[in-house]
Amino acid sequence: MSHRVSTPENRVVVFLHSGEYDRVHQGLSIAAAATAAGRRVEVYLFWWALERFLMDRLDEPDFTGREDVADRFEARGMPTVRALLEHVRESGLGTVAGCTGSLGALGSESKAGDSGIDVWLGWSAILQRTAGVTDRFYL
Image (cartoon, rainbow, N blue to C red; front, side, top):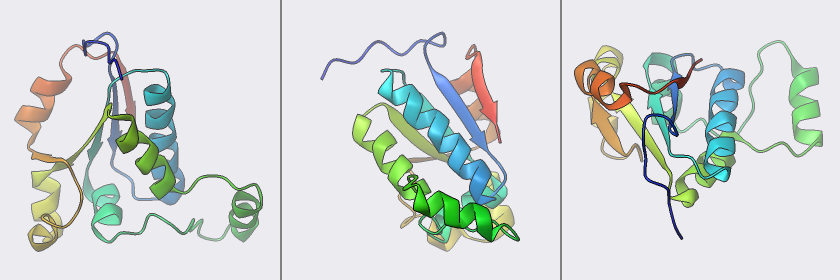
């Protein structure tokens, strides 16, 4: 498989802060669409989104108070967060990074090793890695 050189102009960065299923799903949908188009993607997990990954809550859509949406989501066969994540990983174009500060704030350091997160970074490294990227999404 041939990959284009990753430049700030053709990379997509998704910052996931909220752990709400709809926001995590939207962020990984953006990432999956970008990799399908041959673009390199970096997904950064913070706070509640990071917690969702550490707790492995990627399969069941949990739209609080909106069972109608959850039923429709399942009836239409929409991909789960896990399915989107697998697409991004299988593309060879995606990286999932966890924030070390959020990890510490959550008190979840013991879960980092088994999380499946590709790399752990602090804000200095995140800013350095994402410098110049114009396609940034914050959810």
